[in-house]
Image (cartoon, rainbow, N blue to C red; front, side, top):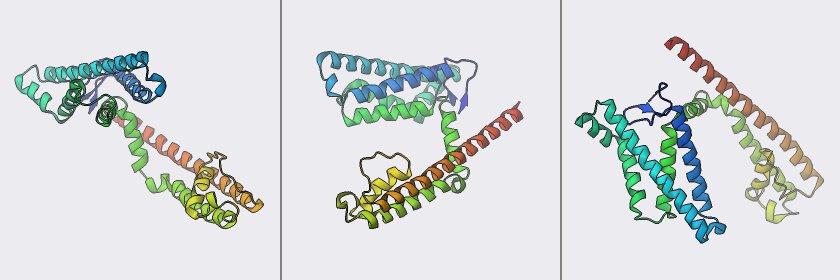
Amino acid sequence: MVYRQSDLWYFGDYSGNLPGNNYSLVLNTVIVLLLAQIALSTEPLFDTVKGRVFLNSTLNFIEVFFIADYIGKLANTWAHYEYSFKGFIKGFLSKYGLVDILIVLVLVTEYFPNDSFVVIGIYIFKSLLSIYFSSFQRVLKRIYFILTDSPAYTFFPLALLSIVTYLMAFFIYLIEKNNDVEHFGSIVRAFWFSIVTMTTIGYGDITPTTSLGKVIAISFGIIGIVCVALLTANIIESNNKFNELESTSGTSED
């Protein structure tokens, strides 16, 4: 896939060109609106006449947008092939074109209720597909590079954190099992406290009662801070490496 830098409002197409930056921004805004609509549709406060009208109107707007998005991409694909019949068929029968038309048909036919698992699932799938085929793809490529370039090095602190988290759960279980059976009566139960402590979340809903247990929690909490800091530093280093490779690639193309 390539980017059309000449037209910031380009819809994108099914022949390999991604949307322009401005259109990608609009697309991502609509996707955020869609996710908000799905969340609000589960909120009892919106289960009123006005609330349902608002949510349905928002959903109708999103449907119209996705229909226009499909038509725009299909038209751009057709134009790419100089409006030939063969070009239209190529665009219509392209794998992503078929996915889009199937999604649009399911949404507009209203065979399934708007709040059904099928429709919500299709909307989320369409959102993920739209995000992927937008300028956001650059971000996804960056994340993919960070995950795959040197995972053993980048995520070594994460592996260390997992091991130490288990050790903490084991020690807390031994120390606190007789004082709080509900939360520390087994290593499995102690995992919740261990995880929230090691990841420095620290909800405070569960705490050890013995002095030794508190010392163990503080000690492992410090180790957790170090592991998270190392993980962050390694990810930043991989991100900088990606920037250097991207800059080098851009220079060589020029």
